[in-house]
Image 1: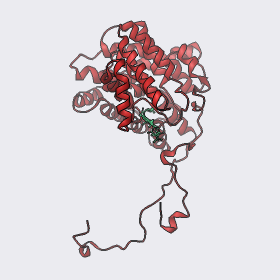
Image 2: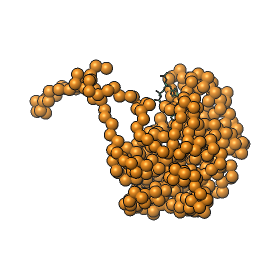
Image 3: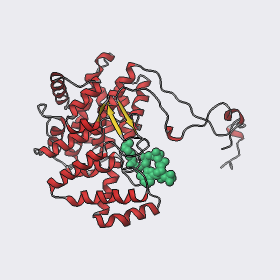
Image 4: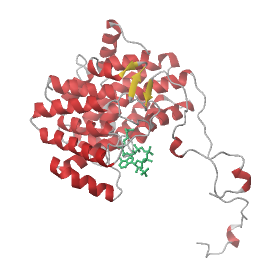
Length: 385
Ligand code: CMC
C-alpha cells in the first residue's frame, strides 16, 4: 500500500486482527495453541473437566488457588445468594423481551445492574464481581420465562449454579446428567486468554471505568458471530443438515460458496481445541439419555466432512451447540449461556487489570490522504460527490 511519506516511515505496519500480538501478562488462563492445552491458573482443563464444578472454577480464577472445603462452600453460598435481581431490573427485562434479542437484553441488564451497586475500594470488588456472575444466570433464565409468558422461578441458593439455572429456566428438576453437562460447559468456557470479549473488558477496565462498564463491553463483543454468536449459527447448520447423509453435500456447497462454517477455525489453536473432546463426549452422553443420537451423529459427520476438506480445527462453539440444544436451551439463548460462563473469566480479568493497571492504548497507522486543502462550506462546489 502506498502511504503518505511522513506516515510511512514513522509507524510500523499493523498486524491485522492483532494476530500473535502479546498484549499483557496474566496469571489466569494459558492457551497453548501448538499443543491444544488450556490451563486455568496452571491447572489443566482436562483435570478440571473431569472432577470439579463451576463454583470451584470461579474460586480458582478469583483466588489463583484450589479452594479449601470452607472456601468452596462459602463461594457456593455467595453465588447462590447472588442469583437475585433488583425489581427495577426485572421491569427492564419485562419491557425488552420479545422486542430485542436475548443477548441485547442481557447487555442492557448488565449495564442496568451497575446502577444498584455502590462504589467500593478495589479490595472489596470481588464480592461485587461475584454478584454479577450469579445475576447473569438469573437474568438469562428470566428473559426466557418472561418472553414465553411463564411465571418467574425464584433462585434456590442451596443448589449449585448449574442445577439452579436449569430449574429456573425449565421449571422442573434437571437430571444428574443434565446438571453435569451444564457444569462441564460452564467450566470449559469460563476463561480463554485474551479472546475478543475479555480483551474488550480489559481495555474498558484499563481506563478505570467501573466493573459493570467493562462487563457491558464484553457482552457486546461476545455477541458477534465470529466470537460467541457462532454457537447459535452452528446449531442452525446442524439442524439444517438434519441427518448424517446430508452432511457431505452441505459442506461441499459451503466450501464452494466460500462460506465460513460456524464452529470451525481458531486464531490460536492449531491442532485441536482443548475443550472439544470434553464437549463432544458429553454431547454423546446427553443425546443418549434423550434417545436422540441423530443430532450427535449429524454433528460428528459435519465435523468429519469439514476436516476432510480443510485443515481447520473444530472450535468450542461446535459441540457446545448440540449439547445446549439437548439440554433444552433455545438457540437464541446459546450466546447468553456463553456469557453466563465467561463472566467468571471477564470479572477475574477486570480484577487483575485493576490490580496492576496501565491504560491500554495502541496506535493506528493512518493510511488516508494528508495535507488536503480545506475549503469553507460556502465555497464548496455542490457537485463534490
Ligand atoms: N470455515 C471455512 N474456512 C475457514 C473457517 C471456517 N469456519 N475458519 C477459517 N477458515 C479459513 C479461512 O477462509 C482462511 O482460509 P484461506 O487462508 O484459504 O483464505 C483461513 O482458514 C484462515 O482464516 P481466518 O478467518 O483468516 O482466521 P482468523 O484467525 O482471522 O479467524 C475465526 C478465526 C475463529 C474468526 C474464523 O476461523 C471463523 O470465522 N470461524 C467461524 C466462526 C466461529 O466458529 N467462531 C468461534 C471462534 S472460537 C470461540 C470464540 O472465540 O468465541
